[in-house]
Image (cartoon, rainbow, N blue to C red; front, side, top):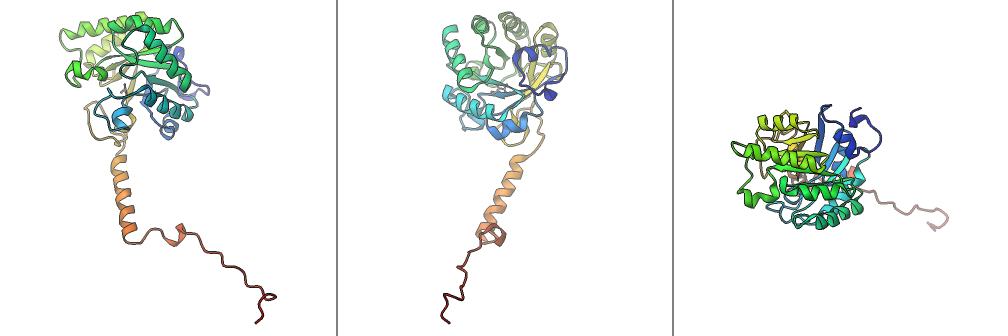
Amino acid sequence: MSASTSLKPVLPPEIRARKGGDPIVVLTAYTTPVARLVDPHCDVALVGDSLGMVVHGLPSTIGVTMEMMILHGRAVMRGLSKAMCVIDMPFGSYEEGPEQAYRNAARLMAETGAPAVKLEGGTHMAPTIAFLTARGVPVMAHIGLTPQAVNTLGGYKVVGRGAEAEVLMEDALAVEAAGAFSVVLEKVPEGLAARVSRTLSIPTIGIGAGVGCDGQVLVVDDMLGLFTDFRPKFVKRYAELGKTADDAIAAYAADVRARRFPAPEHAFADILPAKSAAKDPK
Ligand code: KIV
């Protein structure tokens, strides 16, 4: 059964079992109202650390903190009734080693109620993923372009061309062997992503990785046309809500300046004290 018709919340084993089945639908969500919109249509709502750029105006995801992830994770959980919530582990919260990763993953899960976390990295993160999964922390891995490593990668580049292809395949096999229940492939050439997807027994979730993945994820503000600072090639705009909002705000400002708003129907009538004949001497 597709998660979108299930009445109980989706959990990681169900996502893992979707390998080879209906494509897995994932969008980011950072707030309760957006989680409510995403919930009926998606299998997974990802509280991505992209919220640093999209919601908080940071230049990259590097400045995102545990406190930000917990605050937004709680908000998203309040808006979900069946889609599974996955929370990103922010930069600096897991790279020191498995114990640090466990402490922070357990905090994210305990303080938000989300049943899974996502972290970036392939082969070098495999021991951490194995440590977490052995201790009750389901992990969605994230390889290819890993935005938290933008400074070492030298930009938001395609990862996996030429000699990098076999490194990416090794990363994919390593996170699978470590126990990840799924893996995000970001900005990976489509042929390679399809090959990785055919090779792995866990679902691949693509973003800029072509149609051969087991599922797809986009940043919700990108596909709604709300976040327009970047326009990556892999984003399809399904709406232009930024333009709609700009038009609406401009119309409001013009109405206020012209005293067209508020109109009588937006105001409250005064209630005058009723005149009483008995009390009125005239
Ligand atoms: O932070 C994020 O939103 C992500 C997805 C785009 C995969 O990691």
